[in-house]
Each structure stands twice: as structure tokens, then as C-alpha cells.
Image (cartoon, rainbow, N blue to C red):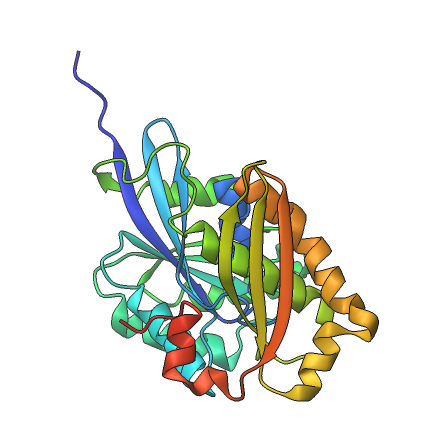
Length: 301
């Protein structure tokens, strides 16, 4: 009996900031592999999320939200997003149904029109659970005018609406190929980087609008004790002395909150108990420092 062909391929998820790219990828993968917050451009690096089924494997590339670069980190994020469009089987372009087609979306559409070439583009209109029917249809009609966009699917990454339909469409663009990653592997990110991102996510959520995006996290040391507990030492970098005080909080309350929120997820990641130690250091204008970006994992290689 002839063995059934196995399909595989890479799919880049791209869109403006805060349209739900990471939320969708986490849902499709089945667990968190990319951090999520309400803050724009939470994702800073290209994150791979692996979906493995019986007869196919999709490797999703979650990218930073595409917007104007204001510093060296922003330039790096923009470069990562656009470079992820090449050598993939499909591009998944996401939009926010509650926002309509914004200028930044039009700019991205124009860029995709030029860059997509022979690569098929599927558009997902997200957050349809919070948008009007007329608003969704207006976006759909605009997208259907673009010949390079092959499919338009209204979805909700929050509720799962039409996500199975979207996966079936993406599956149709896969090619005969190998299973790139083992069945139990959901991301290519090292544990050290995932742990740093978990801490950054909890900081962004806890600090809300008090601190701008000038936060970086570096895991300085991970050690496994003889009793099976991991000691994790991490530094939260900020750009101003005033920010340091806010991150630490009165009597260290905010820093303790960030640590208590991050610890359970890091323990799940490591599969052991974790002793998490956090420090806060000021590193002025680190987002414009090539050395600092490299040290924090934003490698411009």
C-alpha cells in the first residue's frame, strides 16, 4: 500500500500591532509560545510555533507588529517582520475587525503587494466577536479587491470562531515535505528566552501604562540544584531612574508581583519548582544600543 504523502510548510503571520497574531498562534499551537499583552508590539522577535497533525505540520512564524520604527530596536523588529515573508509557503495577514482598515494596514497591504510575489496571502479578520457585521464586511470588501489575497476569513482568536476553517485553508497551501520538528515540540525558542519573555509579559501587564516599552529582560543565570529546584536569576532593564522605582514599587511590592505572576509559568516551562530572583537595572537608551540589543537576544545577524 502506498504511504500517504505528508504535507508541511512555513506560514508567516504578519499585521499591524495588537491585531492578535500571538493570541492566534498560541491557540493553534495549543499552548503559549508567544507572550501576549494589550500593549502594541509586545512581540519583538520572530517566534516559531509548531502545529503537528497526523498528516501535516505547519510552522507558524509570529512576527512583531509592523509600524514605524522610532529607535534601533524598532528598526530590528521591522526587519524581522519583513524578512519573515521570504521562503514560506503562505503569508497570513491579520487585521483587527474593531479598527477597520487603518493607514498602517493600507501601508502593509501595499508592501505585501510588492513583496508577496508568488507566495499566496490569506487574510484573517480577527476580533469579529467584538465588531459589527457591517464593519467586518467593509474590511472584507476592501481586501477582496486585492488579487494577491487568495482568501479572506473572519475569525476570533479569543473565542476560536472559524479558526478551524482558517487552518484548513492554510493546510491547502502546504507542500509535500518532511516533519520539521518532533511531535512534542511546539516552538524553537530556547527555555532561557521563553523565561525572559514570560517575565517581560508579566511586567507589561502589571505596569500597564506607567512604563513605556523600554523594558528588556535578561536571564543572567539558570542553575539546577541537587534537590531538583531551578534557581533563575533575571534582570529587568529600564531606561530611566524614575522607571526603576516604579518597577520595584513601594517596599518592592511591584517587583514581587511580577515575580509571583511569572514563577508559575516558568515552573511549568521547566517542569520543576523555581526560585526566581529579579533585579532592576537602569541602562539608558538601551533600545538604540547594538550591544544591548545583542545581549538581550535581538540579534541583527
